[in-house]
Image 1: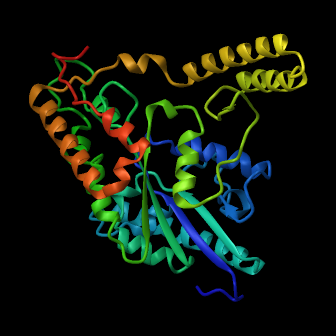
Image 2 (image 1 turned 135 degrees about the vertical axis):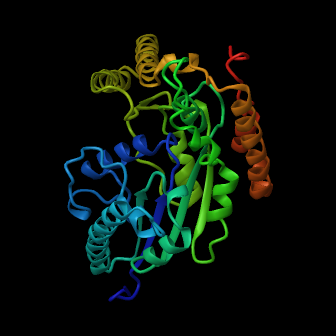
Length: 346
């Protein structure tokens, strides 16, 4: 599809996953910002009439992965993907037509397609998207491969453990580990050499949980306006991961803090209360017991995972080149630790 008006330019920015890398929190933030008119000019997150409402209040994943899924052997799955592809094509036709009809310059459209990093053919997906967009940028968020946290790898490792120690069944999802689904070096090798699209890789630092720091880093790397700013006290912004009750309380304290700015003593007390409520709300949102979970793989599987992600990290560092020396990446690599088996777990 070509632009009917000169100067109309569209860019697709696709968050390709993998899971546990901030996709849901980003989607919720962008949806709320779209509803409240807070998205910057020229930035579009397709929801509602721009994408059709499927009855999902989160609508965190756009089904554009269907455009790049090829070589399906299961006939039922092939029919399902084909039907989904037809719907997505219609939606993209409508979206591109609406934006191009405005004739008002440049637009960046963000899609969240969690799981696309491993499930689709990058070349096929790029060819399809360039039928609607003038440029395509893929985003990969690399979350730490560390045992005992809510990271992509440890999430799969925990899921791979049978529910009972005496179960004769094999681990239900160990294939997710063996297939190197969370091998970032392997992912960038597939997506980083595209001639007609660009891959942007950013680190997920664990201190970013339930903050906007990751979003700001992602938007800056892509060249988008920063994520919408929320009310804040002392630089702490409210986040979509906290409960509605905590958000109301924090907004009240933020407003009170502004009114009492001329009274240092009371202002400091309100700020301390804001920090306390915020910390409690974020702690609840982070599932505090997750830090005490440990992978229970046998020695052989644990060693397989350990060698896999250590090699992956080395290859990822080589891919990043000079970028690996940036402070955020230095912190990311420093945080990586080998996965332990159950005998060595803390």
